[in-house]
Amino acid sequence: MPKLKPDIQRARRDHILDAAEQCFARAGFHRTTIQDICRQAGISPGALYVYFDSKEALIAGICERDRAEFSERLAALADAPDFLSALQELGEHYFVHQPVYKSLLCLEIGMESTRNPRIGEIHRSVDEFIRTGFERLFQRLKDERRIAPEMDIPSLARMMAVIGDGLFSRRAVDPGFDGRAMVPATVQVVAALLKSVRGTATTSGAGNQPSGEPT
Image 1: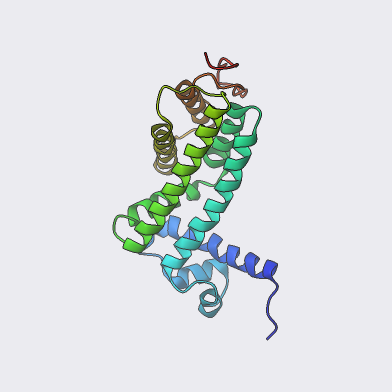
Image 2: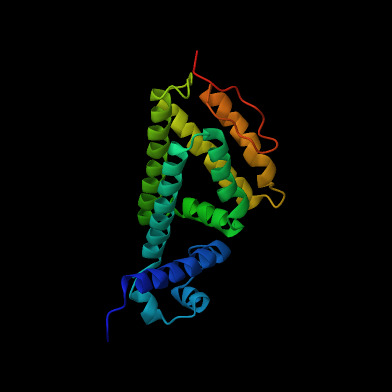
């Protein structure tokens, strides 16, 4: 049998991960079986096992894919001339436009991390990646004199992780969650923590923050 081209392999792998995400979010990690995921993806177990040998491997694949996407979005955020507007766009991606089941999946992985050592290792790795990413971002903004936070940079990065976790959790469990209202409000909170950001969040509800160099 001829070997599949890399782009076809990536597409098939992503298709399986998409199916796994929906199954895990819908039924939870323990109740979801490999057969459930195969039915969702429309493939045989043998085709799935070519790419993933366990449910834990599927979670690892989901997290690695999400981490790669977040890394690209964070890099774009760092280079944005209007940081707060770019931050609001990032928030809208995750808490307005992204399907709700993605937030449910985040909650499910977090809960499973308390019971399954392998999932716990994966979860902590992603959490550390996000925290250090924000830490590097805020340090760069401070070095460029675009922010002048009173809080130290590591604590500021941890606070961003807490805020993000809270938004994901609320969106997962609260049917009345309104991301279009919550994201601008959250940007206002972040702007107050950062202080003196050049660039303002321009979408309605975000408010107008002072621009210019820190004093």
